[in-house]
Amino acid sequence: MQNHPALKDHKVMSDLKLVIGNKNISSWSFRPWILLTQFGIPFEEISLKLFTPEYAAIIDKYSPSKKVPVLNDGDLRVWDSLSIAEYLAEKYAEKGLWPKDQIARAKARSVTAEMHSGFTGLRSNLSMNFHGRKSDFSVPEDAKKDIDRIQTLWEECLSSYGGPFLFGQNFSIADAFYAPVVSRFITYGVKLGPKASEYVETISNLPSYKAWGEGAKLEIN
Image 1: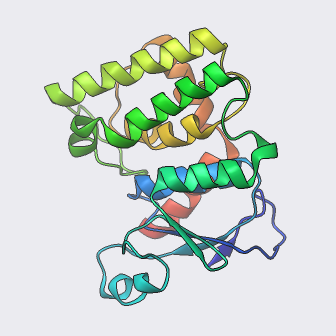
Image 2 (image 1 turned 180 degrees about the horizontal axis):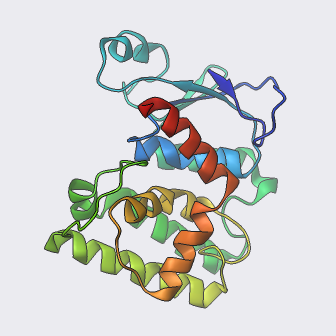
């Protein structure tokens, strides 16, 4: 278990407990983790190894769905990465996890929901392997369609709102939900246009992204 007070070394007490799976492979866990960390919201990390007897023995303590991620806030259990993000957006409204502008916020929710429920070709063919590197990977056709759609979404948002993040100067829930996609594109060496490549560079250089990567590296060493 680890405490995460905005990537600082000192520990703080927090009622928030985020239960996650293996950092190298759990894209769903990555979303709320990078969201909390990027916004400097203190939380306790509880990391469980997926597909193990230990996981099966303890997950009931934290998650009614028996899945991760799940956020425990005192006696409250919030499961599913999008539900967690929405809960945090309400609980920490002053931090602006969604864009403040109503129209931008509506679009950000649509972009996020599309990631949450779609892109099955990408998910099934380019599974998350944070520290893996696949040279000369041939992208299947159904995954290519998803990659093209994601790149179009990114380019539209970056052009409309000026970057460096999808909805302007500030990181948002939308960026958190596409962070695992950034890692997939890096792992599989996906060729992107200039704007999308710049966005990959922006996200992958965030201290929060790198901190997740350090944790993932410890799992495979």
